[in-house]
Amino acid sequence: MKIFSLFFLIIHRITIIMPLRNEIASLEELAKKKIHEILMLNRDQIKEKAYKWRMIFMEYLPGNLRTDLLCYGFSKYDSKLCMPSYPLNFWVPFSIALFDKRIKYVPPISINDLEKDLPLLLSFISYLWTYRPKIDKLFMNLVYVNKNCNRWNNCNNSIQLSMNILRKCFDEGLANNLVQLQLTYQCDDSILIAIGRHSKYLKMLDVSCSSAITINGIKGFIFKNLNTLQNDMLNGSEVQIYAFLKSIIENREILNTICFTLEEIRLQYNKTNNLGWILIISCIQSLRHLGWPGKWNIKKIIMTVWHEIIKPKTFNLQSITLVDWDIACEEIYMMTECLPNLRNLNTTLTRSYEPLNSRNHQLLIKFWNKLNSLTLYIENSIEYFELFCRNGYVQNLSELTIKSVSLDISVDLALLQSGCPNLIILDIVSILLYINLKPTGKFKYLKKVTTEAPSAETKSWFLFYGCPSLEEFQIYNEVDPEYWKNIFINPPSLICQQMKRLQIVFVLSNENTDFLIQPYVMNYSIITEFIRKCLVLNIFGSILNFNMSTQDIENIYSFIRMNNYSLTIY
Image (tube, rainbow, N blue to C red; front, side, top):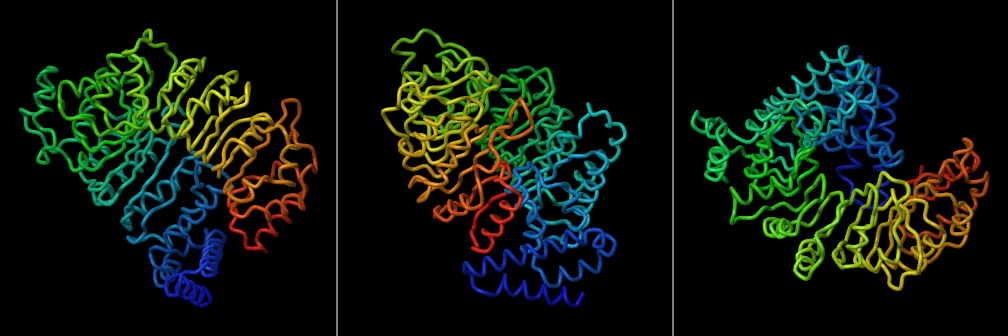
């Protein structure tokens, strides 16, 4: 134990006292890695002799370093393996040695196995209760813990106990410092009320898919203790509700502090009326981003609240998600007036518009041209988006994401370039790009492209001609290894000089279990020479599906370590 104490003291001096230089930063990273390995190897021993281990860590490691160690595995695990979570059994067993009130944040929580993970979840929440860390971020995605699970009855007691302790944690101070909070699937009225009453700085709240939330929870989340008259008005007619809400907007004596700090919310609740969303949209004046609202027609609720309650004021909303874009031109006029700050829109685009005339055209131009970011969910056809491209409605977009459930949808690259010339980020993984006629213009500002199985002609256009500012290129379901072999041997100047992220994921063949890429098309020499030529590349993605020999892969890892490249490769 004395050796550990001396080691931790050295690390403390390295990270706190010595000046920040590249060499020292690398040494600090190495030290964190070694300590994390010790923690991982001694998880069981730490759990059995928690007190002794805690003494060492509390004496020699400051809170910020213990926070880094607690989350060290998550950052590496997440970036290297592209997994949505860091398994609980990787870090909860040793976290007791690191926990105290100076911990700033913890890894995201995700339940992957009910029997194994629920006891660990209970342990983690008990640490929150015992040590009261002043964390500002807490992410708990409990998607696998739902009442449709066959094992629900066996696990229900543990889930309820964990959530009851968590609610008490919020009541006793955990909510005070939170800035971001995710609690999906398991939030209920009592937890939501505790969050609303005690949060002082909360900006982002995600309690989506929590079916236990009711209108009573939303009322307690928004309002302080209401008197009998105020409750009667909220339970009265629409006229009474609108009159009451109009009278208390920005009233800090009635509204919880969260109504003045919360900027983003994701919530669904199961009720037959839309009062919950009316309360949220009218009372949380600080709201900037509105996530998926479930089956509610949020567009009509926004227009109702504006017209009946807050007009002539407007909303601060910058980002909204609409279940279905089915808006008449008169409604577009109203949306333009009440959402002057709207810049990001997530929606489906499946329906045609009223016949275009000069007035309708100007309304559409005014609404769509102010958007910076657009995420489209295409179901059957992309013709309406193509119409938007031809008519100049999306020419100001800087970020475009298109998602589709159909494998037969494709878009012409020339039309996309002419319709959205100012893109900086393009994500079209679920549809195909093709070149009918070669684009006459360029994406002058495009820095990041994510796409799926593009043709050689399309890839070459991005890499050699059409994107002079490109820095990140991610390709999924790639089927042409020979193309990339040639690129790696003779990379274009764009890749050598400015590419920061290059990821190619090769597809599996439907006929057999082997990758389409032929054995040993790539090898150690090709990859390492390519890395040498890339001056700023820091993410290369996976080389495991390059079908190289195991020895070649190990040699590449060794090459990166020996040359001290700051390169994520897995």
